Length: 225
Ligand code: MN
Image (cartoon, rainbow, N blue to C red; front, side, top):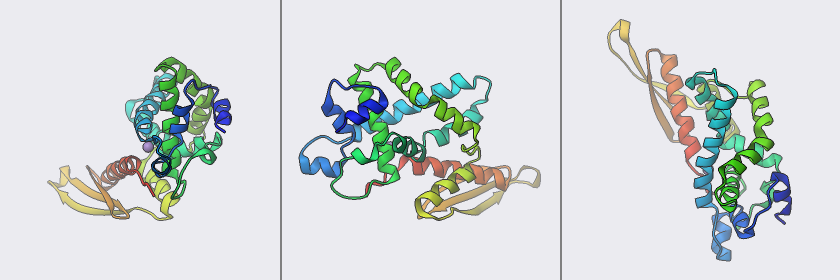
């Protein structure tokens, strides 16, 4: 059943249980008494973060850190991982007893799968990088070129919240301080009871910062429905 996954990613597991674990949601694990993907996801999160940053720095050595950081924000988002997972046909293999295979869970499984490859290969970073690059480098560069990657966080945040809940985030100026020539704006961004605060020399700048922080928050939280 998982042979198809192995075929798609171009890697054959020595330990098939590890592969299965990457696809095992906690709800299924409890019923079946087998391990779930949580720890692998934790490792995979860090691993993919590294692979994406490495790929960005390698591909765009002339770009400033700020520009790379906003590209990264999208490329490591669960939305993007979910998209890649769908292209590989991963969602149908996820083992769950309850709940829906939502963007968050599909993204988690994508992370867990790469951690599983890493562990199974004897922690061979080079091999994982090779497989990942072969599968996704062109895809990622194309995504960047086609400007699907939104360089500003307000757009990115809205894209995420629209996709997840069909709602737009709200912005609210909390305070304006300092003398006229050196104003500090404080803005709060919020969606569905979650919020983040940003500061800046203009309202626009503060909104960007608030959006960035909320994007990061949304990417970290796990909705285990
Ligand atoms: Mn995750």
